[in-house]
Length: 483
Image 1: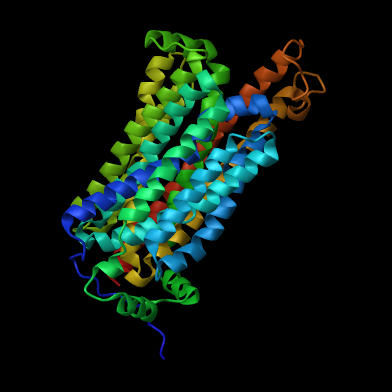
Image 2 (image 1 turned 90 degrees about the vertical axis):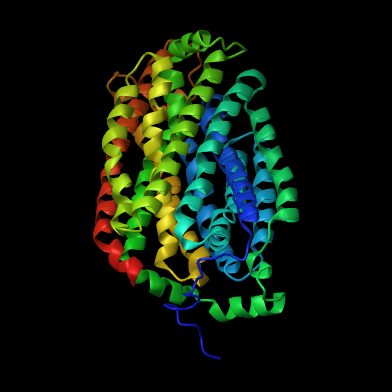
């Protein structure tokens, strides 16, 4: 039996879909809901970090490792084998099991008593979420024809923004009134319900076609491309790697900020947050935390939805005439978003700050449609889930795995530098043992906030690498998509 040619296997993709339009819309809505829960469970930890740090006595380096590295290692390494199965197996089953696993581990995070227990629970979330996006991308590229695929994938990516909004908003309110552990319990529950709905209603396109199950399996097996051949295809598509690195470096900044920005505002603008909460009539046990969760959540949600939709719409509208338009917005928008972010990071007015944060959050999401919608056009249908998994491996290992951890290490390094200038023997590690009523506590607190501030400013320089990657894709995308 001859193996399939990796360059051509499954390359004939009709513009129509075996699914009726009404079901496509339902399936897209369900997958957006699942992806929303995915990011709710992933991002809720960001608003809880100040409380978790205080309760479990964690440093910024430990926060970065717990929230980013441990999650990313399992998320990215398991994503590829799961995607390999998704290219020929039962994708709705993969989605359902994955959803149940990550939701269960989110619930378990509420029982963590130390760094190790919390890190293991977050790693478990990564195991479950590894099966989500590659599988969803594979399904959506078969549910929707080529001419509307970028928009469908961009709409799916809105789950990132909606989930981040709900995670931070609900997490802030729940933590302020009932504690951070309760927030994890509440976050894990919706996914278990969605897993039941997914099991009952999500359809496999291979079985929805006129082929019977045996024929569909045989066709998928015949068109299956080995991982070696898949890598060979991608090695001849430099655009894939430029898009992946552009997204990875952009994600490095956005993930780092999402994990540490709540803590920075909490430590540096505590009084301003309470005043902003009073402005909106927000009460409760800890109104500043509740307001911060709502403010950052709505900024991420509104800005992210605008960015996701705008990026996908731009690609569908202008990309057909000139494929280079796929990278136009990711190249241009940082020149708007970054200056606004730097301004916000220095503001005392937390009411205006949260409104202005919408603008940089547009930039956080504006590359989703171009990158996630562009990659399927670079590869044959039989390896789209694999390509999506490799794409996510690059983006998440660099952006989510290394980004927050290196940010935390940088923050601690700056803090130690500032502490050394005080003429004391204090370090970030030594400060963990300093009680709040100790005169040295103020020294520890002030210099650790300065370390965090320095890390926030310096981390934005990584955007230069993202811009270089997208600029490189500008020169190769027409050749790679048309070949």
